[in-house]
Image 1 (tube, rainbow, N blue to C red):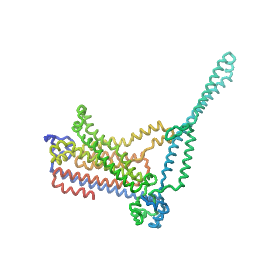
Image 2: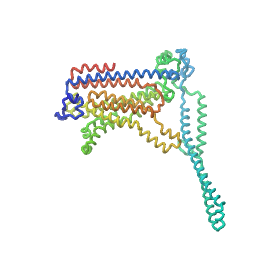
Image 3: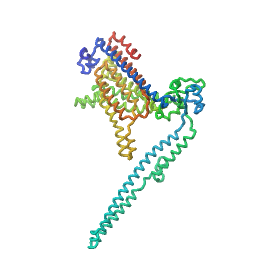
Length: 601
């Protein structure tokens, strides 16, 4: 429609009308200001939004069914009836005092409670046991291999001795001894016997049990000890230490687990108010599964948590600011002309081959932006861990919020607006009042960049995700070097859990790009459809055969995903309203203002 009803001509830098490129003919760049073609764009946006809202609602209804089923199953196990209470005052940091407090409120609905203890010493001992078990397994495997090698050498030597003995006792052997050749034969036989003894002695030497030096100050400077005996005795000693330590009364932390016998009581516990308890204490949340808890963060006080949150917020802010520098540079390379102006040394390469020119202009900037995104999640996950979040799944939710915000600001806004401003910076300096016209002409050009980005995510990102080259290389290296036993090789090849905070952010970012640029450059929609089709196959395959989950959150991510989808609709509609205003469509612009309001509702 844009190509058939548009002007099919644009202005260059000197204001001369020229024929647009084929992709510009199919975008809003080809539609002149005030054109009635924009009515079709507005109506299509309404239909598209209504259908998207219908699909989101259907998913939400289906999620409710599965969520209720999960909570009912967990209630039978006790997980769904347990609540994590944080910032317990000192006078309530005993099992008896805490139980008395909740019994006075919930009476027969209260089941049991336990105050978390500082078990750092026992956890260190458990970590040492795991480390020693690995080394013991390695030493036992080496000793078994040495024994088998010794037995093979002894059998080989014994076979040679038996053969020579049989030869000397046979009639042929007696004949050799009697006809003057016996001395030579007997000498040869003696040589072989001596060689057999050497094999036997070598086997004894090879059979030496594995040894290692004990460590002092993490340095191997102690005396040599038998590895199997030493690791076995150390594991036994640490296990006894843990068994005895469980009987001690360790320092109580300011967190605990409360279990009820009613889901209603567990739900109402979050709204509990106790006048006798100090303010900003007794915070209640549904408890995660035991293996999901991150125990080192259970003892952080409210003041420490607040300070850490402020530090993380400041660090995240400055990370966003400094990350804008490389992203803005990448966004300025969305066209071949801007790429050549930033790097003049590329001119001979660009003009040498159209294939190279297309790769540099389309693929390289998008690939660089994708590589930037790979570095962020590890940093943001450490921020969540330092902040004091108490469960691994909650850390993934925090990572989801931060990473999505990060890529929206740095990848979407910076590339769309920053790239347009940097591309038209000279014209803007000459005529500051032309900012609206410049943005109206430049923002649609970012659709080419994001189309290439979705293509790379589809045809490079998903195969890489499925192949997992980093895990494959590291696992292969460990399997062929360090790992010698079957258990060690299984651990080296064990798949990792999925980082849902990263995966969901990247998927929803593609949805954001598709929603925003669908009315601006509809050419992006087929590639977004391909992304969804390939993503469905890859993610299903990984969920069924590759991912080994460490915990089960019961679909706790969906409300956060739903909130991000509402933000996606809002950004897309605000952008559409701005496009109508830039195109000076005076009739559509006032009506379109209600679109983001209605879609948010």
